[in-house]
Length: 158
Image (cartoon, rainbow, N blue to C red; front, side, top):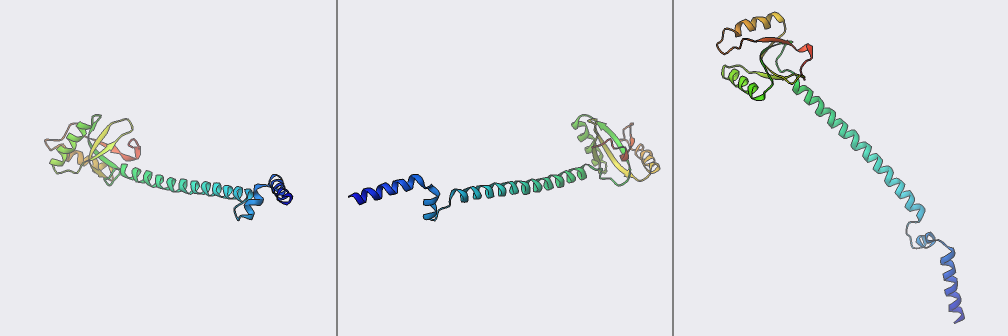
């Protein structure tokens, strides 16, 4: 009986004096040092994953931005665009595009930074060619009186 009391007291004393790490290591479980190291490694991996994801997202955003810029560029070849109308209301733009399409043109809409949308019918490398095109257009019955030439190098469009 004294031996069992002694063993119980010894075991209780060992538990009080020794740490949980001692028993955890005896059982093959990770100690507090192991747990801290695993936590630090997990945080480092999470930071690395965040950086990788951020870089991938930035690349995707830059590709999307480049595609959006490309889509906003005038599709006609040439520096000078012959514009047959400029409108604030989208419905007027649609009417002009439909009218020009009915007449056999392939109009293009250009959005300007001031909020106006212009409808162009052609593009030319020289101002002289564009001006000649205006003379040709005014012969048609559908042609508005305010046809003008837009130089894309002005950068007024988006």
